[in-house]
Length: 306
Image (tube, rainbow, N blue to C red):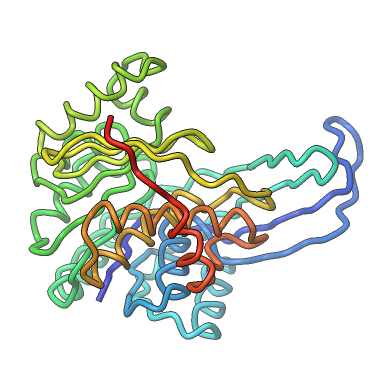
């Protein structure tokens, strides 16, 4: 079983416009609502890829009710921790004329100490049945940057981290199996200019030396870089038409977890994760993947040694 955990779910509104004009009155041609936010996207992608999984998350208010309802209707297993704070609402604006996607993000509010304690207790119970844990998403204001590190202290299985900043650096001491910041997140985490490949590689190896067995760094449609003590690798994602890029990183993390749980070697698992991210580009709603398409895309991805 793969366990997805995070503190920043969202009830997502997606607005589509034939042409979006900032500063003007814009009337959407289509409106869609769905469960989203990094942790829910991972949970959704795990389910769509056919892996036994469970999602552990804080939810509250009307948005939380809608998220519960959608997961129940789709048959996605979840362990809900109730919070008095309403789950945030985020909005995606898609301009069909330009292909531009604009994300309006409401920051998650601080959960109470009692709510975090309840989630920690639930994690301690559920993680004992997990083969892989995926920890993802930023931390709400007021939550200690040691939150993920403290969860990892209770974790005996392989962990995939899609986090950044101090919480990533503190978690490295727990020797996670794989971390996957994007290039901008890694720059901000380390306070370095990583525009040159040599600097990027050195930064990735720094994470390896600090405890991460595998480091995967994405950069939008540009090359994905991978580092471990086995070597340095690079692969270019397939070029595909974009419908909505939101959720690609989450689909990547989920795809890697699924492939690892099925016994694939790390590079093959990363290839499968890249294919999941590519398939996500075609979907209007985040992480609504198709396993057969992902497998077809994965066969087209090749890694080169750096």
